[in-house]
Image 1 (cartoon, rainbow, N blue to C red):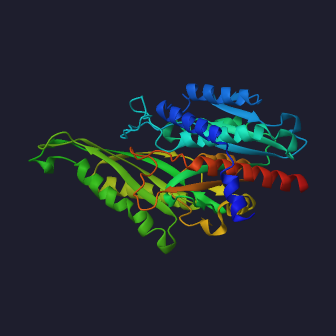
Image 2 (spheres, rainbow, N blue to C red):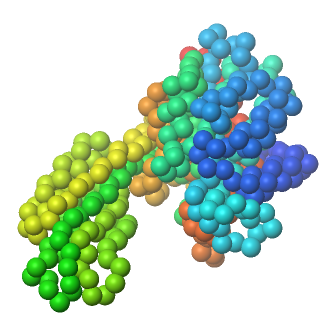
Image 3 (cartoon, rainbow, N blue to C red):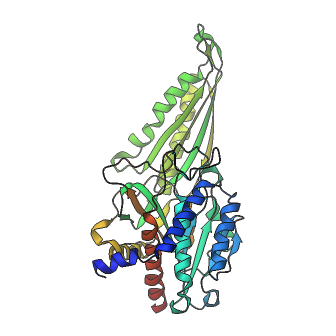
Length: 402
């Protein structure tokens, strides 16, 4: 594909459709919904799909599954394309005309843009049903974010991947330069363990520490000791990130409290490394508790697994991206990253690949995902649509020929 052909593929969206997609994205941004609560979003997407000849079905409560050619399921290859629907439980600090109207809810990770991209793909595919060598399944997934997450796992349990040969997903990423695409084979995003530590000691007057068992001192030592989980347990190769992200204790300046609480995460790219870090964490907690004569309760929650891209699928993403934007703008730089994604559940079930659209604007400090000033860049919509459509053509042709 020549440079002019590549540019034409990215710019192939009719101007009226692109304007409509931007309006949809702004509307979704203005009306964000948390995981498993995406009722309005689901209705908007379902209406769009039905108008284009799809027969979507609800999945995982507020998600949707829609097949382009249901008549070919089981008789021809099927590839799935996924977008996430939910927002984050946080405030928005922008002055955008389409800023969130809901306090404590905001699209600060770009799921509004991902949903819009897949809606654009649905529009383009609707006119090409007869010419494709197989079926395309669109997965509009609820509940990717945080403690409400895991929507992918629920969709799988309800049959979203039945008869699917490969699955693909994308994410905008402001830390990568705009117009670049990042993808790699193998471990791409981390497994996350979330932990909460409750330290119970003996409180008392600030002038009488000898009568107390200070949970703040124990907690401070614990924060320092947990840093050895990577610096002294894993060596130069690393493979994990341990972060204490919250420390709460006490309410005034002359009382030693009876309790302190710590929270944080362990992120790793190999289950064996994650298990090792957790095992050593338990030992450190027990040691600090004994040293300071306090009780420490460790509440550990295992989150999403490591997201592993299949080599064949990652190669397809790189090939399609190279044809669209040039090989020099496609790389695996910055990967794997220590964030987590429940697309990992999809990739555990069938071969798949997850890739990133760079969104960092030249000469600017672009707000990152989960920042209160973040906003999805509408300029990514044509590239996202072109990537998904390119994967449809590439993979259906290859799978049909195999």
